[in-house]
Amino acid sequence: MQSHELLHEVLHDGNAKEIAAEMGLSLSLIYKWAEPAEAGSGTANPLDRIEALVRCSKDLRVVQWICERAGGFFIKNPKSNWPHPHFLIPATNQIVQEFADLLAVIASAAADNSITKQESKEIRARWEELKAVTEGFVRCCEEGNFSPLRKDLGRSENL
Image (tube, rainbow, N blue to C red; front, side, top):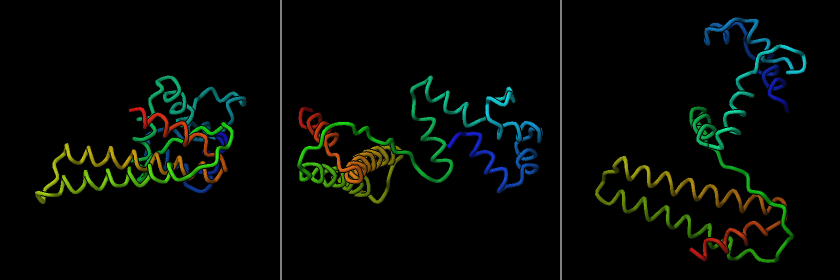
């Protein structure tokens, strides 16, 4: 789906006047966002600008910030264009190990019945790593292609 198509649906389902008022923008600008770029609106919509910012900066923290503001989180989809090897045990072991690492960080932080900001950051980092590893595994399962898992496991074993 193109950004202008999504914005068109959002405006159709929502109230463009309220959106314009809340954002302090003109109603015509809000409607221009829902037009395809080729239509000559001359106004890049916010979604296209965010996409450009991420592409130019190569920094996914922008996307993570938006996801957090929306009450969720971002996990990058793994690339999977390698031939299919026949193993799963090491990959599942890695997920279990990541989960164990997260639990160890949580247990250590909570041992004194208080969790500091630094401990919270460590918990968040381990959680993000667990989500990423698990998402990679699930995607490979869905695609029936486990080569990316083998590649990732090879890197972690050499660390």
